Length: 81
Image (cartoon, rainbow, N blue to C red):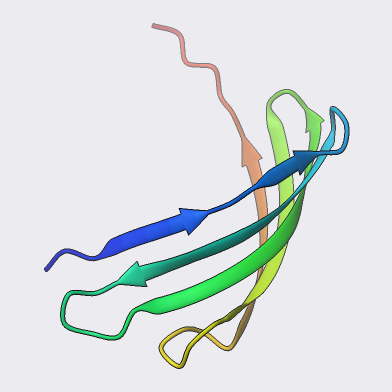
């Protein structure tokens, strides 16, 4: 069965290297209780190809996680065609 996702995530750039965001999102299951969550985070761009971010949030209903944190490190590779 299909599961649907929704999200609203406004973000603000502080400068060329930092941005912050807050996000409300959730999952809608056809035969179950929707999971509703929110989180907030900060992103750091040490260079054009690197991104480091940390976030944390809570569930907004019983079906969602009570509390969570996340840490991510991303690198963008340039692929030659």
